[in-house]
Amino acid sequence: MREGKSHVKKPYVIIHTLTSLDGRIHAIDLPEFNSAALQYEELALHADTQVFNIDGYLNGRVTTDDNNTFYRAPDVNESAAPVPEGDFLGDTNAPMYYVSIDPSGRLGWRENFVNYGTRLAHVVSVLTEMASNAYKDLLRRLGISYVIAGRDKLDNALVLHKLATLFGMERVMIGGGGVLNWAYLQDGLVDELSLLLAPVADASPDAPGLFTAREPLSMVQPHAFSLIEAKPVKESTVWLRYKVNREKSA
Ligand SMILES: NC(=O)c1ccc[n+]([C@@H]2O[C@H](COP(=O)([O-])OP(=O)(O)OC[C@H]3O[C@@H](n4cnc5c(N)ncnc54)[C@H](OP(=O)(O)O)[C@@H]3O)[C@@H](O)[C@H]2O)c1
Image (cartoon, rainbow, N blue to C red; front, side, top):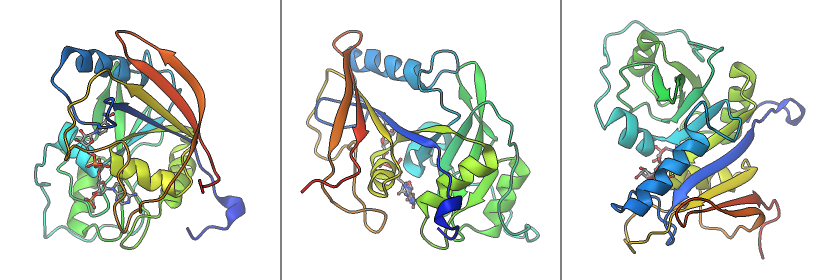
């Protein structure tokens, strides 16, 4: 990032993920998985029950398409007038923010919020300069905030700096998926890993995993973690919380 080190701000960052016993993060069609999924949501995705005291949560482009925008093409106007340069702040006073990591501007949003239990989470789209004028025009028309953090590759530290300084976020969750989780972890930006381990497995070789290295965003590299707490919760589900060790493993 361009700012001097002394000016860099960062929220406290928690990766919170529901995994199977074999480390996969896709949905598995079993009652045991559904029970663990409800517990995952209670811990993190409901305004009245969330335990992390977060102001916002980040999701990768694929996760947002799976859950919110459903692979729709964005309804852009290719002849839109040029939008002003820089970031667009639609709401800086929201009770919760949904931060969508979408470097090229591909997601087909139709509104500027997602449901967060009894509240709405205001959508903040994180873009690079690769995102088109027409896409930024669409976000402005919808009242979706956006920040630009990088020319053709996201500067993850700058993303967090902007979330902290422009929106006042002090604690955020990374909701996944595995590509997003690993990119932030590898950049040394994650403070805590929270895993809800569901008592299920299906050995699917192609399912997304908790962490996925993807060049040029990230690479395969060993990392170690220190246990904060291991807690059995309901119905054979276990909640594991780790600190991320700053020193790399040998
Ligand atoms: N069990 C759980 O708790 C949980 C939670 C979340 C998601 N999921 C599941 O996980 C699966 C998706 O995971 P995934 O790993 O395939 O995808 P993902 O992390 O959701 O999204 C990956 C995409 O997001 C963008 N991206 C992420 N990090 C980036 C970074 N640091 N810099 C630039 N771009 C970045 C890129 O978009 P472009 O391709 O547009 O460049 C990348 O291809 C889905 O099946 C979802 O349902 C499970």
